[in-house]
Image 1 (cartoon, rainbow, N blue to C red):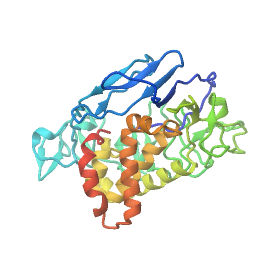
Image 2: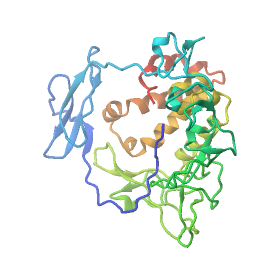
Image 3: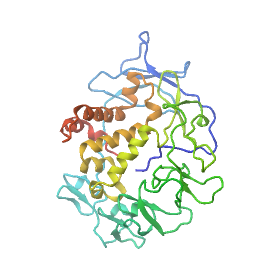
Image 4: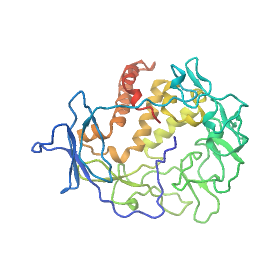
Length: 370
């Protein structure tokens, strides 16, 4: 799973025009089982909750093609289970040559042939010679991607040189203004303690930025990316931008995505760092080091819940601002599930995890597909 939370705009977008989202008014009479009504005259959606037990689910319309939607029967597909994740039978397992052994899916063993790292067992990757090989340790060279490294390490490599001589280094370990070999087009490098990188105005090398926050109090309303500015980093002599995204609110208002030093994002990085340095991460397949299914299988429930909640809070930030109740219930099912789990955990103050286990057991199968 690779998710980009902050996007650095090179060419700033034009002003946004956003649709509105709100609960239907008392005077509106929607058709039976209709949960979303598109009103072309106002460029707005009007919503009502599904009330029939047999049809509790509201299918979301394509945002590019506004439409009306009716309630339907939810039919969640079972998540795939990969090596390192808990199973009942071998038929549950994907990419698992050994099948389900002692309740865990297992892949191809060390020194056996492979076509990709997906084939290999936990602790292994598929080498350039197509053999399952032990993951590269901290400071080791030869990685082509983070998935060649132990699960708490990323690959410091020049992605434009086609080099296979990357170095495995801990996530979030490279300090501000220290060099890294690559920076994504979105300005992201998870090896940086700040999560962000770039080339300074008078520099030639890529370096990590210092921790950057939104320039104003969040949530920041916006009408284009140009509104979404960060605090400054004197070395770069330029402004960093995040994306401006349309929200799901009655005013048709847009909001800036977060920067890594904004409080929710900062908390996510903190709990993600804790995951990477836990013993539990070693039990995950290299390609599934960030997968919720593996995290919830092996990590303690409280920490796993905290990680997933803050990940979603960062990802969904523009969309969870100023929602009407029915809009939030329909559009943010996943976020609300984990928000309630997190709040229950905090309220219970239950150190042995038992306070939320029953709550999670009822809904985990719907939300562990990442």
